[in-house]
Amino acid sequence: KAKMPGAARRLPGVFVNNMIIESLLDTDLYKFTMMQCVLHQFPGAEVAYRFRCRNVGVELGPYADEIRDEIHHLCSLRFKDEELEYLAGLRFIKSDFVDFLSLFHLKEKYITVKADPEAPTGIDITIEGPWLHTILFEIPVLAIVNEVYFRHQMPVADEKEGMKRLRAKIDLIRNEPDNDNLKITGFGTRRRFSRAWQTTVTETLIRELGREKFAGTSNVDLARRYGLIPIGTMAHEYLQACQALGPRLRDSQIYGFEMWAKEYRGDLGIALSDVYGMDPFLKDFDMFFCKLFDGARHDSGDPFLWGEKMIEHYRRNKCDPRGKTLIFSDALTVPRIIELYRRFNHRIGVGFGIGTNLMNDLGPEPLNIVVKMIRANGQPVAKISDTPEKGMCEDLTYLAYLKQVFGIPA
Image (cartoon, rainbow, N blue to C red; front, side, top):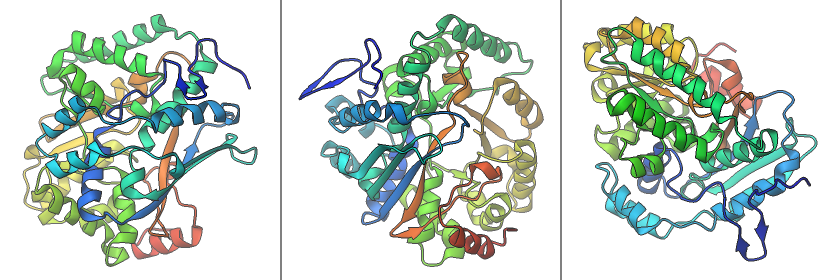
Protein backbone atom coordinates (compact mmCIF):
# COMPACT_ATOMS: atom_id res chain seq x y z
CA LYS A 1 0.00 0.00 0.00
CA ALA A 2 1.43 3.36 -1.02
CA LYS A 3 2.04 5.80 1.83
CA MET A 4 1.77 9.52 1.34
CA PRO A 5 4.70 11.56 2.66
CA GLY A 6 3.42 13.48 5.64
CA ALA A 7 -0.08 11.98 5.41
CA ALA A 8 -1.85 11.04 8.60
CA ARG A 9 -1.11 7.46 9.68
CA ARG A 10 -2.51 5.58 12.63
CA LEU A 11 -0.06 4.05 15.06
CA PRO A 12 -1.10 1.73 17.90
CA GLY A 13 -3.00 3.96 20.28
CA VAL A 14 -1.56 7.13 18.73
CA PHE A 15 -2.91 9.59 16.18
CA VAL A 16 -0.47 11.56 14.10
CA ASN A 17 -1.66 15.11 13.41
CA ASN A 18 -3.17 16.21 10.12
CA MET A 19 -6.23 14.01 10.34
CA ILE A 20 -8.96 15.06 7.92
CA ILE A 21 -11.87 15.47 10.36
CA GLU A 22 -11.07 17.18 13.66
CA SER A 23 -14.54 18.31 14.72
CA LEU A 24 -17.98 16.69 14.64
CA LEU A 25 -19.27 20.11 13.58
CA ASP A 26 -17.31 19.68 10.33
CA THR A 27 -20.47 18.60 8.52
CA ASP A 28 -23.53 20.16 6.91
CA LEU A 29 -26.27 21.76 9.00
CA TYR A 30 -29.02 19.60 7.54
CA LYS A 31 -27.51 16.56 9.24
CA PHE A 32 -28.24 18.17 12.62
CA THR A 33 -31.69 19.44 11.68
CA MET A 34 -32.66 15.98 10.43
CA MET A 35 -30.99 14.28 13.40
CA GLN A 36 -33.02 16.36 15.85
CA CYS A 37 -36.19 15.37 13.99
CA VAL A 38 -35.10 11.72 14.17
CA LEU A 39 -34.51 11.99 17.93
CA HIS A 40 -38.00 13.35 18.53
CA GLN A 41 -40.08 11.68 15.80
CA PHE A 42 -38.28 8.44 14.75
CA PRO A 43 -35.93 7.42 17.60
CA GLY A 44 -36.23 3.70 16.92
CA ALA A 45 -35.68 3.74 13.14
CA GLU A 46 -33.02 1.43 11.68
CA VAL A 47 -31.40 2.33 8.35
CA ALA A 48 -28.74 1.33 5.85
CA TYR A 49 -26.65 3.48 3.50
CA ARG A 50 -24.29 2.68 0.64
CA PHE A 51 -21.48 4.66 -0.99
CA ARG A 52 -21.44 5.29 -4.73
CA CYS A 53 -18.92 7.00 -7.00
CA ARG A 54 -20.41 8.15 -10.33
CA ASN A 55 -17.06 8.80 -12.01
CA VAL A 56 -15.87 6.31 -14.61
CA GLY A 57 -12.36 4.92 -14.31
CA VAL A 58 -11.68 6.00 -10.73
CA GLU A 59 -10.01 3.39 -8.51
CA LEU A 60 -10.47 3.84 -4.75
CA GLY A 61 -9.67 0.32 -3.55
CA PRO A 62 -5.97 1.03 -2.83
CA TYR A 63 -7.01 3.70 -0.33
CA ALA A 64 -9.35 1.54 1.76
CA ASP A 65 -6.92 1.17 4.68
CA GLU A 66 -6.17 4.88 4.75
CA ILE A 67 -9.89 5.69 4.69
CA ARG A 68 -10.45 3.26 7.57
CA ASP A 69 -7.71 4.97 9.57
CA GLU A 70 -9.42 8.31 9.11
CA ILE A 71 -12.81 6.88 10.09
CA HIS A 72 -11.24 5.35 13.19
CA HIS A 73 -10.13 8.83 14.19
CA LEU A 74 -13.56 10.27 13.31
CA CYS A 75 -15.13 7.80 15.73
CA SER A 76 -12.84 8.99 18.53
CA LEU A 77 -14.21 12.53 18.37
CA ARG A 78 -16.69 14.04 20.84
CA PHE A 79 -18.49 17.36 20.80
CA LYS A 80 -16.57 20.01 22.71
CA ASP A 81 -18.26 22.30 25.21
CA GLU A 82 -17.88 25.35 22.99
CA GLU A 83 -19.39 23.43 20.04
CA LEU A 84 -22.40 22.38 22.09
CA GLU A 85 -22.80 25.94 23.30
CA TYR A 86 -22.82 27.13 19.70
CA LEU A 87 -25.50 24.60 18.69
CA ALA A 88 -27.58 25.52 21.72
CA GLY A 89 -27.55 29.12 20.51
CA LEU A 90 -29.25 28.27 17.20
CA ARG A 91 -32.93 29.18 17.47
CA PHE A 92 -34.20 25.83 16.11
CA ILE A 93 -31.99 23.54 18.20
CA LYS A 94 -33.65 22.21 21.36
CA SER A 95 -31.95 21.68 24.69
CA ASP A 96 -32.62 17.94 24.92
CA PHE A 97 -30.94 17.44 21.54
CA VAL A 98 -27.85 19.28 22.78
CA ASP A 99 -27.89 17.07 25.89
CA PHE A 100 -28.01 14.01 23.65
CA LEU A 101 -25.10 15.29 21.54
CA SER A 102 -23.03 15.81 24.69
CA LEU A 103 -23.07 12.01 25.09
CA PHE A 104 -22.82 11.16 21.39
CA HIS A 105 -20.02 9.69 19.33
CA LEU A 106 -19.94 7.79 16.05
CA LYS A 107 -19.35 4.05 16.42
CA GLU A 108 -17.12 2.06 14.08
CA LYS A 109 -19.31 -1.02 14.38
CA TYR A 110 -21.92 0.67 12.20
CA ILE A 111 -19.64 1.28 9.19
CA THR A 112 -17.75 -1.11 6.91
CA VAL A 113 -15.04 -0.08 4.45
CA LYS A 114 -13.43 -2.73 2.26
CA ALA A 115 -11.56 -2.99 -0.99
CA ASP A 116 -13.77 -4.85 -3.44
CA PRO A 117 -12.48 -5.63 -6.95
CA GLU A 118 -16.08 -6.28 -8.04
CA ALA A 119 -17.26 -2.79 -7.05
CA PRO A 120 -17.26 -0.15 -9.84
CA THR A 121 -14.50 1.88 -8.15
CA GLY A 122 -12.89 -0.94 -6.20
CA ILE A 123 -14.30 -0.02 -2.79
CA ASP A 124 -17.46 -0.83 -0.86
CA ILE A 125 -18.60 1.42 1.99
CA THR A 126 -21.77 0.56 3.88
CA ILE A 127 -23.34 2.09 6.98
CA GLU A 128 -26.02 0.21 8.90
CA GLY A 129 -27.60 0.72 12.31
CA PRO A 130 -29.93 3.02 14.24
CA TRP A 131 -30.71 6.13 12.20
CA LEU A 132 -30.00 8.32 15.20
CA HIS A 133 -26.49 6.86 15.54
CA THR A 134 -25.55 6.67 11.85
CA ILE A 135 -26.91 9.89 10.35
CA LEU A 136 -23.72 11.88 11.01
CA PHE A 137 -21.46 9.48 9.07
CA GLU A 138 -22.31 10.62 5.53
CA ILE A 139 -20.67 14.02 5.16
CA PRO A 140 -17.37 13.38 7.00
CA VAL A 141 -16.95 9.99 5.31
CA LEU A 142 -17.37 11.56 1.86
CA ALA A 143 -14.96 14.35 2.82
CA ILE A 144 -12.47 11.70 3.93
CA VAL A 145 -12.75 9.74 0.67
CA ASN A 146 -12.24 12.94 -1.31
CA GLU A 147 -9.24 14.19 0.60
CA VAL A 148 -7.52 10.80 0.72
CA TYR A 149 -8.02 10.43 -3.03
CA PHE A 150 -6.63 13.88 -3.85
CA ARG A 151 -3.68 13.44 -1.47
CA HIS A 152 -2.57 10.73 -3.87
CA GLN A 153 -3.70 12.29 -7.14
CA MET A 154 -2.39 15.78 -6.38
CA PRO A 155 -0.03 15.69 -3.37
CA VAL A 156 0.71 19.41 -3.73
CA ALA A 157 -2.45 21.45 -4.30
CA ASP A 158 -2.23 23.94 -7.17
CA GLU A 159 -3.53 26.79 -5.03
CA LYS A 160 -2.42 29.37 -7.57
CA GLU A 161 -4.71 27.86 -10.21
CA GLY A 162 -7.49 27.37 -7.67
CA MET A 163 -7.30 30.99 -6.56
CA LYS A 164 -7.27 32.20 -10.17
CA ARG A 165 -10.49 30.30 -10.84
CA LEU A 166 -12.06 31.48 -7.59
CA ARG A 167 -11.31 35.14 -8.31
CA ALA A 168 -12.86 34.83 -11.76
CA LYS A 169 -16.06 33.61 -10.11
CA ILE A 170 -15.97 36.45 -7.60
CA ASP A 171 -15.54 38.98 -10.41
CA LEU A 172 -18.61 37.61 -12.23
CA ILE A 173 -20.73 38.12 -9.12
CA ARG A 174 -19.33 41.59 -8.43
CA ASN A 175 -19.77 42.76 -12.00
CA GLU A 176 -23.31 41.49 -12.53
CA PRO A 177 -25.65 44.49 -12.99
CA ASP A 178 -28.55 44.78 -10.55
CA ASN A 179 -26.88 42.28 -8.24
CA ASP A 180 -28.45 43.47 -4.98
CA ASN A 181 -30.28 40.16 -4.52
CA LEU A 182 -27.46 37.97 -5.85
CA LYS A 183 -26.17 35.94 -2.93
CA ILE A 184 -24.38 32.62 -2.75
CA THR A 185 -24.02 30.06 0.00
CA GLY A 186 -20.98 27.81 0.32
CA PHE A 187 -21.97 24.15 0.08
CA GLY A 188 -19.54 21.41 -0.89
CA THR A 189 -18.15 19.93 2.35
CA ARG A 190 -18.64 16.37 1.12
CA ARG A 191 -16.83 16.93 -2.19
CA ARG A 192 -14.21 19.47 -1.15
CA PHE A 193 -10.62 19.13 -2.31
CA SER A 194 -9.52 19.34 1.32
CA ARG A 195 -10.52 20.85 4.63
CA ALA A 196 -7.71 23.41 4.27
CA TRP A 197 -8.88 24.46 0.80
CA GLN A 198 -12.49 24.82 1.90
CA THR A 199 -11.27 27.11 4.68
CA THR A 200 -9.21 29.16 2.22
CA VAL A 201 -12.17 29.52 -0.16
CA THR A 202 -14.44 30.56 2.71
CA GLU A 203 -11.99 33.18 4.00
CA THR A 204 -11.56 34.57 0.48
CA LEU A 205 -15.30 34.83 -0.12
CA ILE A 206 -15.82 36.65 3.18
CA ARG A 207 -13.04 39.08 2.35
CA GLU A 208 -13.88 39.65 -1.32
CA LEU A 209 -17.67 39.43 -1.39
CA GLY A 210 -18.60 40.41 2.14
CA ARG A 211 -21.34 38.83 4.20
CA GLU A 212 -24.15 40.29 2.10
CA LYS A 213 -23.13 38.55 -1.11
CA PHE A 214 -21.67 35.51 0.68
CA ALA A 215 -24.82 34.67 2.60
CA GLY A 216 -23.56 31.73 4.66
CA THR A 217 -22.28 28.18 4.63
CA SER A 218 -23.71 24.71 5.05
CA ASN A 219 -20.63 23.74 7.11
CA VAL A 220 -21.43 24.19 10.79
CA ASP A 221 -17.80 24.33 11.93
CA LEU A 222 -16.99 27.10 9.46
CA ALA A 223 -20.17 28.96 10.41
CA ARG A 224 -19.16 28.86 14.07
CA ARG A 225 -15.55 29.89 13.50
CA TYR A 226 -16.26 32.72 11.07
CA GLY A 227 -19.58 34.02 12.37
CA LEU A 228 -21.47 32.97 9.24
CA ILE A 229 -25.11 31.93 8.98
CA PRO A 230 -25.38 28.11 8.91
CA ILE A 231 -27.69 27.03 6.07
CA GLY A 232 -29.71 23.83 5.64
CA THR A 233 -32.98 22.05 6.28
CA MET A 234 -33.63 18.53 4.91
CA ALA A 235 -31.91 16.10 2.56
CA HIS A 236 -33.14 13.20 0.43
CA GLU A 237 -32.61 10.60 3.15
CA TYR A 238 -35.30 12.20 5.32
CA LEU A 239 -38.06 11.83 2.74
CA GLN A 240 -36.72 8.45 1.62
CA ALA A 241 -36.95 7.08 5.16
CA CYS A 242 -40.56 8.23 5.34
CA GLN A 243 -41.36 5.61 2.66
CA ALA A 244 -40.86 3.00 5.38
CA LEU A 245 -41.84 5.02 8.45
CA GLY A 246 -45.11 6.56 7.29
CA PRO A 247 -48.59 4.96 7.37
CA ARG A 248 -49.04 4.62 3.58
CA LEU A 249 -46.48 4.71 0.78
CA ARG A 250 -48.46 7.07 -1.45
CA ASP A 251 -48.67 9.56 1.42
CA SER A 252 -45.01 9.26 2.44
CA GLN A 253 -43.97 12.63 1.00
CA ILE A 254 -46.93 14.37 2.67
CA TYR A 255 -46.11 12.52 5.90
CA GLY A 256 -42.50 13.71 5.72
CA PHE A 257 -43.53 17.35 5.34
CA GLU A 258 -46.10 17.03 8.14
CA MET A 259 -43.57 15.52 10.55
CA TRP A 260 -41.09 18.25 9.64
CA ALA A 261 -43.75 20.86 10.43
CA LYS A 262 -44.51 19.07 13.70
CA GLU A 263 -40.83 19.31 14.67
CA TYR A 264 -40.10 22.86 13.52
CA ARG A 265 -43.50 24.58 13.57
CA GLY A 266 -42.87 26.56 10.39
CA ASP A 267 -39.15 27.19 10.92
CA LEU A 268 -36.55 25.73 8.52
CA GLY A 269 -39.17 25.94 5.80
CA ILE A 270 -37.35 24.96 2.60
CA ALA A 271 -38.83 21.75 1.18
CA LEU A 272 -36.79 19.39 -0.98
CA SER A 273 -38.61 18.74 -4.24
CA ASP A 274 -36.89 15.89 -6.08
CA VAL A 275 -37.16 12.64 -4.14
CA TYR A 276 -40.00 11.48 -6.43
CA GLY A 277 -39.60 14.01 -9.22
CA MET A 278 -41.25 17.36 -9.79
CA ASP A 279 -44.78 16.32 -10.76
CA PRO A 280 -45.39 14.10 -7.69
CA PHE A 281 -43.92 16.88 -5.55
CA LEU A 282 -46.37 19.44 -6.89
CA LYS A 283 -49.31 17.07 -6.34
CA ASP A 284 -48.38 16.69 -2.68
CA PHE A 285 -47.18 20.24 -2.04
CA ASP A 286 -50.69 21.62 -1.77
CA MET A 287 -51.99 25.02 -0.61
CA PHE A 288 -51.33 24.14 3.04
CA PHE A 289 -47.65 23.40 2.40
CA CYS A 290 -47.31 26.29 -0.07
CA LYS A 291 -48.38 28.69 2.66
CA LEU A 292 -46.55 26.95 5.52
CA PHE A 293 -43.14 26.43 3.90
CA ASP A 294 -40.93 29.37 2.93
CA GLY A 295 -39.90 27.82 -0.36
CA ALA A 296 -38.37 24.81 -2.08
CA ARG A 297 -34.95 23.51 -3.10
CA HIS A 298 -34.01 22.33 -6.58
CA ASP A 299 -31.49 19.49 -6.86
CA SER A 300 -32.12 17.75 -10.20
CA GLY A 301 -33.61 18.30 -13.65
CA ASP A 302 -33.86 21.52 -15.64
CA PRO A 303 -33.65 24.38 -13.09
CA PHE A 304 -35.32 26.92 -15.41
CA LEU A 305 -38.32 24.68 -16.05
CA TRP A 306 -38.47 23.86 -12.33
CA GLY A 307 -38.47 27.53 -11.37
CA GLU A 308 -41.23 28.39 -13.80
CA LYS A 309 -43.34 25.49 -12.53
CA MET A 310 -42.84 26.59 -8.92
CA ILE A 311 -43.90 30.16 -9.66
CA GLU A 312 -47.03 28.98 -11.43
CA HIS A 313 -47.75 26.49 -8.64
CA TYR A 314 -47.59 29.22 -6.01
CA ARG A 315 -49.93 31.41 -8.03
CA ARG A 316 -52.45 28.58 -8.43
CA ASN A 317 -52.33 28.07 -4.67
CA LYS A 318 -52.99 31.72 -3.83
CA CYS A 319 -49.41 32.54 -2.78
CA ASP A 320 -47.52 35.57 -4.02
CA PRO A 321 -44.27 34.09 -5.41
CA ARG A 322 -42.40 37.23 -4.36
CA GLY A 323 -42.89 36.15 -0.76
CA LYS A 324 -41.35 32.72 -1.38
CA THR A 325 -37.80 31.53 -2.02
CA LEU A 326 -36.33 29.09 -4.52
CA ILE A 327 -32.99 27.54 -3.56
CA PHE A 328 -30.92 26.20 -6.47
CA SER A 329 -28.25 23.66 -5.53
CA ASP A 330 -27.73 21.22 -8.40
CA ALA A 331 -24.16 21.19 -9.79
CA LEU A 332 -24.08 24.97 -9.92
CA THR A 333 -21.39 27.09 -11.51
CA VAL A 334 -21.27 30.87 -11.22
CA PRO A 335 -22.27 31.43 -14.89
CA ARG A 336 -25.29 29.14 -14.34
CA ILE A 337 -26.13 31.04 -11.13
CA ILE A 338 -26.12 34.31 -13.04
CA GLU A 339 -28.40 32.86 -15.74
CA LEU A 340 -30.86 31.71 -13.09
CA TYR A 341 -30.63 35.01 -11.24
CA ARG A 342 -31.45 36.97 -14.40
CA ARG A 343 -34.45 34.73 -15.11
CA PHE A 344 -36.02 34.76 -11.64
CA ASN A 345 -34.83 37.86 -9.80
CA HIS A 346 -37.73 40.19 -8.88
CA ARG A 347 -40.22 37.42 -9.71
CA ILE A 348 -39.50 35.24 -6.66
CA GLY A 349 -36.85 35.11 -3.96
CA VAL A 350 -33.75 33.18 -5.01
CA GLY A 351 -30.80 31.60 -3.25
CA PHE A 352 -27.87 29.62 -4.59
CA GLY A 353 -25.98 26.84 -2.85
CA ILE A 354 -22.77 26.22 -4.78
CA GLY A 355 -20.71 23.22 -3.76
CA THR A 356 -18.20 21.22 -5.78
CA ASN A 357 -17.43 23.98 -8.29
CA LEU A 358 -16.53 26.26 -5.41
CA MET A 359 -14.72 23.88 -3.07
CA ASN A 360 -12.99 21.56 -5.55
CA ASP A 361 -11.94 23.48 -8.65
CA LEU A 362 -8.15 23.35 -8.80
CA GLY A 363 -7.70 21.43 -12.06
CA PRO A 364 -8.28 17.70 -11.48
CA GLU A 365 -11.74 16.31 -12.14
CA PRO A 366 -13.72 16.25 -8.85
CA LEU A 367 -15.17 13.03 -7.55
CA ASN A 368 -18.94 12.72 -7.96
CA ILE A 369 -19.55 10.66 -4.84
CA VAL A 370 -22.61 10.12 -2.65
CA VAL A 371 -23.77 8.10 0.32
CA LYS A 372 -27.46 7.30 -0.07
CA MET A 373 -29.98 5.55 2.15
CA ILE A 374 -31.02 2.19 0.67
CA ARG A 375 -33.16 0.72 3.47
CA ALA A 376 -35.21 1.89 6.45
CA ASN A 377 -36.61 -0.51 9.04
CA GLY A 378 -35.61 -3.38 6.77
CA GLN A 379 -37.59 -2.07 3.79
CA PRO A 380 -36.04 -0.79 0.54
CA VAL A 381 -36.24 2.95 -0.05
CA ALA A 382 -35.50 4.88 -3.22
CA LYS A 383 -34.80 8.27 -4.70
CA ILE A 384 -36.37 8.91 -8.11
CA SER A 385 -34.61 11.90 -9.59
CA ASP A 386 -35.46 14.25 -12.45
CA THR A 387 -31.83 13.62 -13.43
CA PRO A 388 -31.94 9.81 -13.93
CA GLU A 389 -28.30 9.11 -13.03
CA LYS A 390 -28.88 10.68 -9.60
CA GLY A 391 -31.56 8.13 -8.69
CA MET A 392 -30.60 5.26 -6.41
CA CYS A 393 -32.32 2.04 -5.37
CA GLU A 394 -30.92 -1.46 -4.94
CA ASP A 395 -34.27 -3.25 -5.26
CA LEU A 396 -35.64 -2.92 -8.80
CA THR A 397 -38.94 -4.57 -7.87
CA TYR A 398 -39.53 -1.98 -5.16
CA LEU A 399 -38.48 0.81 -7.51
CA ALA A 400 -41.05 -0.31 -10.09
CA TYR A 401 -43.73 -0.46 -7.39
CA LEU A 402 -42.81 3.00 -6.09
CA LYS A 403 -43.10 4.46 -9.59
CA GLN A 404 -46.48 2.84 -10.03
CA VAL A 405 -47.73 4.20 -6.70
CA PHE A 406 -46.64 7.76 -7.56
CA GLY A 407 -47.74 7.58 -11.20
CA ILE A 408 -44.21 7.93 -12.55
CA PRO A 409 -43.58 6.47 -16.03
CA ALA A 410 -41.41 3.36 -15.91
